[in-house]
Length: 619
Image 1 (spheres, rainbow, N blue to C red):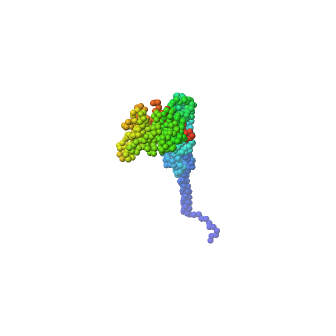
Image 2: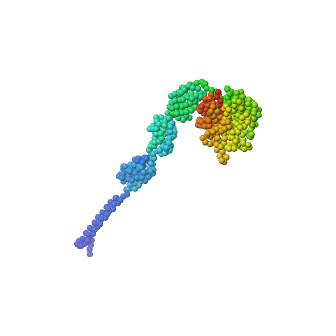
Image 3: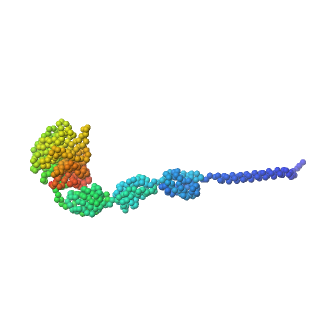
């Protein structure tokens, strides 16, 4: 029996060996476990992911290709080549790198879109970078003006903020007053000079057309420096406008008509109503220096002009002073004899009447009117109508016009311009221009009457209708002018051809082309020359010996109503409804207004297209 702890007994030798082996294996296994743990920990540390890059901002956010762009953010690779940066998909060159900043060059092949940065840690998507395009200039308007003028530049890719566009006129900076992407309004700089206009913004620079600075004109001489109203003077200087209408010439404040112009010389007509004082020339470039001019008393003839004026009604001007004709409903013709003025036209009482120096002379108490008048010595001849029948009065005694059919005188083809509807030769033979119908048809034959008996000029068969509207007697010769319709194979009117018959024989009159808007209103024979006035293609026209003359000169009138030769040297021509609405005439081709400088309707200015100048007489 044992009591307490049994006594320790040593192990056998074999048992010791076994125990040692187990301990060694245990230690070896533990070491292997520790080594594996260390290896595992080490491996975990190596496989931790790299943080993805982050883009916070780009600066600038817009620009042109090639510009340096700074990208701010985090987790960038500090090696520049290890960062892949793209502008809307186009790779950019990274020129420097830190973990928080990249500096790159906007690629030439890039386009507006997002910026991305890629590293081994991933890809970051940043803000949009906007590619700016260079501006272009397609036009400037106006292309010439004086300093201080507003100029509009049209093009593309302008900055909508005015201050971001730098505009230069031949190198001088201009103020931009307004801006859109396609239009800039700028002020031509005072210190600028003629040359190219340039626009610069962040997108680049555009070079546009040449802008020309207009300089104020200068006057160096006026020749002659003194003259009467109506005279032509030459103004010499610089910077005039080569277009006459663009030069405004004032004689002591009274506007003058410019008849021809170059950059260094103007020819103008001294205006009626002007006074001695300074002459100035104004163009788009400014107003010239003042140059003294002296008016001389007029030594020329008296000029009488019959017409209508919206201020005063019917009457005539004598040297630019208007006198109304009382109780006159309209005016159709005027002649002068010495200092006496005779006018024909409908009266307000609707009786055949003419006016001698504005005093009415009634020819009949019946209903009718006069529309042409001729004075030969003491005899006064009037052509008119009573109750639809045509008569010629000689000193108040009426003689009817004979006709084989219905006739028409002073019809719509002549309008109200009948100065030459009646003529009398030296032996007292009376001639009337008109037309009569072919039988019962609607075809009119051009006709003139001699002492009341008709003489047909056309037969009404071979062409369309024809009218004789003006007659003139020169020695033994009878000249008649009018219009003849030319029709096509279908009967349509293709031309209202002006016609001249001398002693019944047709004389050619040329026109540039066919037109149904032609008419003949007046005729004058002076020696070998025959002048015809009327209308070609809707505008005033004058023919001399069958050919149109000074087409652009007389086209400003609606119709050429009267032609008068004074002293066998000066040719006076009147027109109805001048292009600017003022009453006018031409002397030897030079335009003269009765209301110079009249631009706005007032007590002293009619200025309306209703004005009509009907006849002229010079004594």
